[in-house]
Length: 157
Image (cartoon, rainbow, N blue to C red; front, side, top):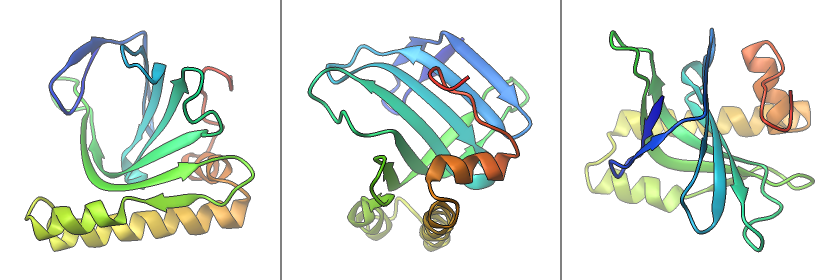
């Protein structure tokens, strides 16, 4: 019942939920911009879908923030793993899904932190999500379609 972030900080988790398509996690946050974090690791989609519960004045319109990468689990010890490939998608309702941090992916590739194969996979994952969101009318609808059920969030039972 802990979450270790990319900087090595270990935080208690309020709720973990394993499904055939991924892992849901909900935890409080000790961050000045958000008080709570919900995440779904979705290995077959190459995505981690996040809802940051922002404090007043920070990104009030943002719904989902999707990290593109390699996600897997559980391993033999019951742990799940996430490798972020720098490319991200941001969902703000009533606006097109935004692809961001393309420059970070290129810089990571140039620095040898991401292989050409990983950069290619990241691009393919992002294009598939963008096309799916366009086809279904929104990224959450596309995610639901891909996993085969309505994904549950704190405000979406």
